[in-house]
Amino acid sequence: MGELTRRRALVGFGAVATVGLAGCSGSATEDEPADEAGTSLETIAIENLDADDHTVDVVVEWNGEIDHWSTHELDGREGGVRLDGDWPTDAGSFRVTVRLDGEELTQASPDRWNDPDCLGLLVVVDRDGGLTIHGNTDCGGEPDVDGQ
Image: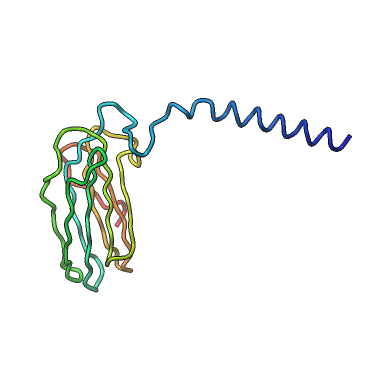
């Protein structure tokens, strides 16, 4: 009887898992935008709040192709830069990858902010030398550092 109970439990779990996953097959993948209109990337700003100097690489992938790749040397606590928008200005699917000192990678895409119409990014090297990316979905506004 114990084996029968286990089988029933496995069958029941399989049925629940199948129903739970049934709606997932039509969702967007990493390469596809969740919304047909997409998001426009307005700005990318980089700030170094750490006392040490850092190197930050920024890659913007637009609709699966690299449209921007730049490297920035940031002085301790004084280093900051606003990137030229040499990526497309229309809405689309994009991902921004940032690398700190040739090692730590951090990625951001519009789905992190629920696929807004527009997005501005602020890349911050914090006082401990960690890397974070903050976003602003207020079209035309400057990116905010959430609580920093």
